[in-house]
Image (cartoon, rainbow, N blue to C red; front, side, top):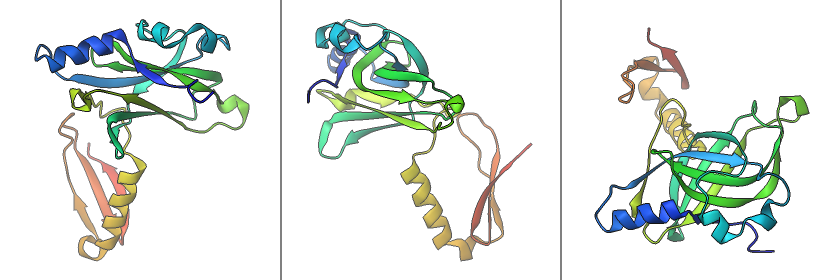
Length: 204
């Protein structure tokens, strides 16, 4: 069925959004993405929209991590797209449910995910899996992303753009070293560009 897979705001998410719009609470800081098995194939029969809205945790969570990217759909500004990346090393289970929690650990959105098996290394066909959750908000401006620099990955499109730009200007920066500081951790690192190739050096 076309409407079998969807994501909804939980009662907690709706209440926090209402509190923000009423000027009684700060923006919702989305922080982590969660996936689960749903407890089995009967998950889709057991959990309709009303049941999902009442959840405070996934039914059978198996994995979670920081949100990788958060953006609005270019065709619909009320659609918020959150993505997480399950690494090659994790898996061995069927994904049927996905959830998004905020920085306070509250389940803000939850969805029925198309049944997808995530292999692990023992299956001999493991690979990274991108989990995408699209949620409709009355006001997407009520939401922001709480970033953990130690977890969140750079989006592929950003990396491609930066690499292409560096190659375009390689003749200007050849054999130079740039020493920036991570403002979140105060950790120093060094970006090295030599003959148009980009590398990263640790500053100890």
